[in-house]
Each structure stands twice: as structure tokens, then as C-alpha cells.
Amino acid sequence: MFVMISYDIVDDKTRLQLMKFLRDYGDRVQKSVFECNLNPKTYLQVKEGVEKLINRRKDRVRYYKICKGCLEKIEISGWGEVSEDEEFHII
Image (tube, rainbow, N blue to C red; front, side, top):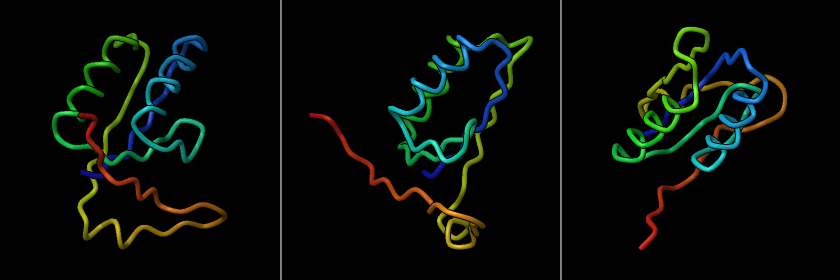
């Protein structure tokens, strides 16, 4: 599933940790936005990892699941492309 993850993190150290964590799962397309192609199990792992890093009272993370049909409708002004990472499995 294609997921766009955006975040607003108050603490600089936590923000850096979250960015480093998320870059293992997707492409950073803006300073606080990642595009990720995740299977359902990995999606849950990402959410659990995020929960361990953030302060739920001060920080905010949003997950936008984007269907295949909607992927074709994404438009970008300026440079960049929609991430097209293929799912992979480590055996």
C-alpha cells in the first residue's frame, strides 16, 4: 500500500530520530513528509516504531493511505516525482 506520512515534531532530537527511522521505509519528499510503499505488516511496524519515538501530547504524525487509482492523480509542481519503490522482502 502507498502511504504518505507527515509529521510535526516539537523536539529537534526526536525529529531527527524520526526522520532517520522513516528513511528506512520510504522516500523523504519534503522536510516532514515521506512517501512509502509498505505491505500491511510493515505498515504496522512503522506505526509501532513511530509511537516509541514521539511524545503523543506534543507531536503529531499523520498517515495517508493512497489507493492505486489516486496515485495516478497526484500532481507535483516544481521538481520531484511520486515515489515508486517496489515492495521487497528480506529472506
